Length: 141
Ligand SMILES: [Zn+2]
Image 1 (cartoon, rainbow, N blue to C red):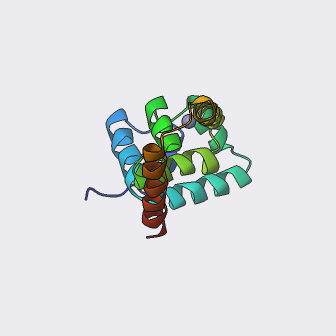
Image 2 (cartoon, protein in one colour):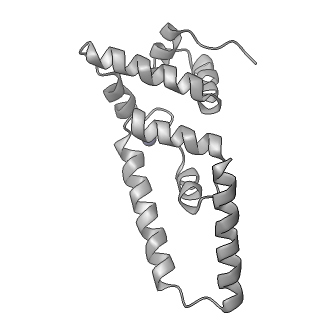
């Protein structure tokens, strides 16, 4: 594993002051490590309490926004859990309203699609319910 960013580097990343290449590496590490995301969230909290709204800066520049297709994978429940956690961090801790709005949009479209779909055949219904059970099981692990 390549060296983890220092607190100063994390803040510099949030404020878009890291060289592009290093910023890409840090973003990758944030995607992969929940520990690092917690550290970043804590740093943002501390800085925000000091009157500096790093979260605002992050939101304004839309740093590290997941793509629309990643968001729709999340809605469909087919996104890998690491990335799903990252998006949760991005929306809840960073408070990205753009992604939050996008996600709500996709969720509504998905719900509407399911309601307007013709009644599934018996076989499809059985398949869907067992797929649901499988998903619930893997979530518990
Ligand atoms: Zn975003």
